Length: 605
Image 1 (tube, rainbow, N blue to C red):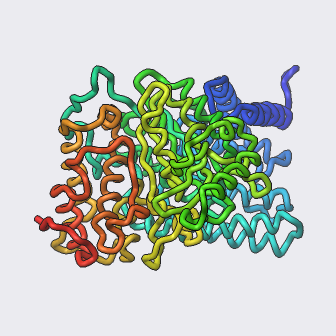
Image 2 (image 1 turned 180 degrees about the vertical axis):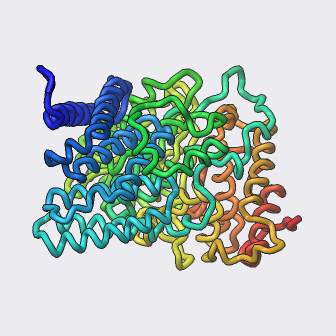
């Protein structure tokens, strides 16, 4: 050995320590805001690239001195985690694909399948498998996700038989979450992708230009904040069913020859033949624009939600917009019927809530006694006639300090906001419209009551007991599947031969509705500016579809508690009563054999 040259084992351990140190450094950065995380990610990628290359070139020598296969698997797993976390930071799906390649290589080469594994190694294998399921779900590789779930069940059972302690219970809970999540999202297994597809969805170029901008420029979706807070919602890891669907609806579905060629490569060949670990410049499909960046907030406090919103607004580029999506319940207090309360009782109820929360602004705000719609920040009457204080985003021990009010969001309306509220208390956020601090916000608000599987109304906050997620969010992300769920039919039950494809009918109709929108002389400039963005335009068109289906339904039409709302108002040309909208709903209902459930005056083409 040459003087000054370290043995391979010592060099390897030094590289491992350096790489793990760079990996740990990344945990110090908050998952929001522009900071030095990009610099340190590149440093971590560089360290792992060097480590990966070294163990490839010296594997035989390292194995002779005690290197285990699970150690190689752990390096590959860390690289996969790096790529996944870089995807979360950038929303660039190519890094998600890179993560999949490394995770798949671990599985195909059975790096963690050691006969003499202890509890620590067994935990590494379980964590790897759970992470891989998340990657597969995000990449729409559902068959592999189901296969991994079966494998994880076997590993959890084996772990429970071999070891004891609280970790056994935790892994059994994780397994229950996975099974519940996959079952709840089963309808998407055989449907079209939830992501925006250039092959299936309307392209921006097919719509005429919007002229009514009043001297302002169109807006581009730059950041999306997706927050969900329920105490019994379907979730896996920190992805709830609702945020998982919204996340996909705000990304491009990879397509084109480059994507097909890339996904046809096997993970084993890719990992085994390359040591190039890092942020590369190649992309899967150069024809696709970048995805908007997303913040996924699982059960955030109000303070944390507002901190992320403030950061996004502060760093927002010119002529861009922030999407704020909140799916949350009302409160721990049961809804109270307004006709059962006197104004004094209502004021006492709200005063108690104000004292609990310590909200000075709420207690100082007054409303005349003869105007019972709002007292302070507390909404008194909803379309369903309930009394509720706000959106509840806190623990059972201190609910009063964790209500999200419309006034909390108003300071951030100095920048353009696209707001979606999915809650039985969504109506209180209508008060934002007209009170903005600089830029007009647009709002899509869910119904106060949601149709459950039995065809009856239930508060939106109770819908998660059905393990299917919120219907309003489902309409915004998978409109055809939501239509089928509303009517209690299977999306695969209609005769396909000689029939129009329902998804194609929706796509064609959305182009027609989009044209009606942008050519309307009465469209609000606030809506006109967001229609240039394909993701936001898609959400608006799906909202129009949701509103029309419920309004034209024989059982739910005419009942305000079932009607979604928007602010400002959309043009009359695409109201549920308009001929172009009625005709499409009736045609789709006729195609699926459920036309008798609707009351429309138009006739199908």
